[in-house]
Structures are given as C-alpha cells and as structure tokens.
Image 1: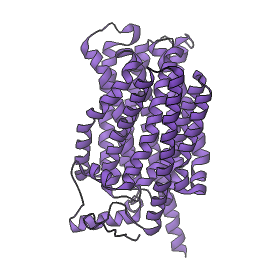
Image 2: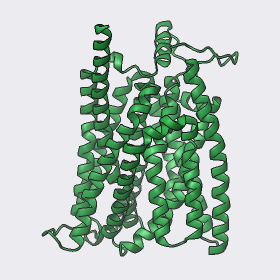
Image 3: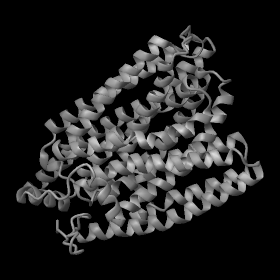
Image 4: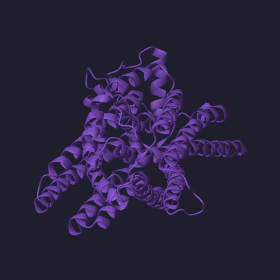
Length: 476
C-alpha cells in the first residue's frame, strides 16, 4: 500500500516538473512569437508598401514553404523529437538576430533613407520568416507535446500550459506597447527612434527563443523517460515498429499521404482551414484600422497592434486559467470542438449588425482569445492517439499549407470584396461565413466522436493495414 502511495507521489512530482519545463518553453515561444508576429505587419507595411500587398504575400508563402516542409519531413525520420524542437528554435533565433542586424543597418520609418532593392526584398523575407515560425517552431512544439502527453494529461495540463503562454505574450506585448506608446509621448525620458525600439524588440525575441533548447534539454535530463511516453498505445506501437524494423511509411511525402488517406487527419486540416480563413479576413480589416489609429507611422501602427495583442493575451489568460480545463472536462472533446464555430457565428452576426471599427476590433480580439486559449489546445489534443508520421509530418503539412492555403483563400476573399459596393460586400461576407461555420460544426462533431472512440478502444489512428483496409487496435 505504501509503495503504491510513493509511486503516485513520484508520478505527481515529475508530472509537475514536466509541466513547469513545458510551460517555460511555451512561455518563451509565445513571448518571442508575439513580438515578431505583430512586427511583421508593421515592418512589411513600412518597408514594402501599403496593406494591399499583404494578400499577395500570403499567397506567395504557399509556394515558398514547400522546400522547408520536405526538409522537415526528412528530418523527422532521422532525428529525435526533442532534437527537432531544439534545432528549429535555435535556427530561428539565429535568423532573428540576422534580421535585427539588417534593421539596425538600414533603419526604419523616417530614419530609413534606403530605396535599394535588397532592403525591399528583406521586407518580403522577414514576412516569410515570421509566417514560417508558426509551423516550424510553434507547430513542432505542439507535435512534441502531443507525443509525450496522455489524453487525461492533456485535460489536466493544457489549460495550465496555455496560461504560461498567455503570460509570455502579455509580458512582451506589454513591454512593446509601453516602449512605443510612451516614447511617442516623450514620457519617462524615453527618446528612442523607431529603429531603436524595433531593434530592441527583435533582439529580445531572438534571445527568448534561445531559451527553448536549454529548457528542453533540462527537462530531458531531469524527468525520467517513463514520464515522457504520452499515449501508451501509440508508444507501444512505435516500439513494435522499431523492433520489427518496419517503421511504416517514411520519406518526405509521407505526411501528405497520411493527410489524404485518413479522414481523421483531413478533418483536423478542415478545422484549421475554417478558422484561418475567417482569421485572415478579420486580420486584414484590422490592419486598416491599425494604420488609421497609428497615424500612418510604423511606430504608431506597431503600438496599436501590440495594444490589441496584449488585450487578447490577457483575455486568453483568464479563459485558459479559469475555463479551459473545466469546460473540456464538462463537455468532452466532441462538444468542446464545436465551441469555436459557435463563437464565430455570434461574432459574425455582431460584425454584420455593427460595421464600426470598434466592432471589428472587438470581434478580432474575441476570435483570437477564444481560439488560442481554448480551441487550439482541444484541436491539438486530437493528435495524441495518432502515429508519429501523423503527429509530425501530417501536422507540418496542415500547419504550413493548411494555414497558408486558408489564408490565401481569405486573402482572395479580401481582394474580391475590395472591389464590391459596401452593401453587396456585407451580403457576400455573411453568406461566406455562414457556409464555413456550418461545415465547421459538422466536421467538429465527427472529429470529436472519432477521437473519443479511439481513446476508449485503445486505438492508434494511422496504424491500420492500409492494403487490406483493416484496423488493428493496440490495447494500452
């Protein structure tokens, strides 16, 4: 009896330690990403030109990411999971320092007198760098997390981990908002140029990203391997694969093959697609409000964007800390997945009834806060009962081409509605959104149902005999 108690205490202690390390990693990633994600728009507008270039930039990203996805898929076959996260976070940190050096050399806003083609190209390159951060740093973190987390562990810890990330986002967005707002007003003796402030923020982002491999390596050293197995059925399946020498479908195109072959993986793709389309539409509209509120300056635009993201992270923190775990436990994954499309439905109605800039900003903040604090962790937990190739390779295709294709569709929608009369654009917008939300609700219901079936039966999704079309559940 005492031995069982000691084992439980040890498990609890190491689970808390694992949560602390993972939370610290998530804090650093989101703190870093928050800075560059908002700088991306303001720097792009300042360096490249007006917001009309943004939809085209998002479309070009789809083609540009193909080589990285293929390289990443090859790396998954030969590199351990935690090493993938360490390598990508370190690489993106170094690139971040390089981008900061370019800004320091050329300057920004009125300090920039360069009209060279190289500097103009840098604006596009920086956009690409930030757009690829999400699938190859944040996405790899989520894939790694799902591979070392059990279904019950996800319900218990994902809300806490999201809270860590929201605090990270609040810290860096708060610092950026303070520097930009008070520097503009000449308070507290600040006399920094636009270039100095943006340079400081870019260096801070790169430094935070350097902490990721340090914390991951510390976790691997401090937490015993038996507490890093994750979903036991998937772990045992992978052990059998390694022992038999049959590691399933490998290669650069395996992730795409799983995505097209399995309705479950395609359903995850659809969920992300529906959100990103709507997000792209509202995000584009937000840039117009940001430029007007910022007075047309790079510093003013950045200040407004960081103000919005600080509020978004704060609301997200409240949702994740007090609501995520309780709601998922009460509703279950199936109905939790349906919360986001229902929330967006309410936001669309609100947006249609009130076309003021404040209504747009409120809808955008609510959309982002609910998604990142609640919907995203529930969606990411869907990868837990899947094979490694689906967790890492299919997820990479979904996070890159799924997101970029969705944003491309959203950008195309923005381009099309720019040329319509306001009344006609409103009708087109409402019809488009209602259709997406209806499909999203159906996909969410069946995805949640399939996830619960897999967990209940001890299945590993993607481990079936493809040739004969049969499924062999592996009991945990």
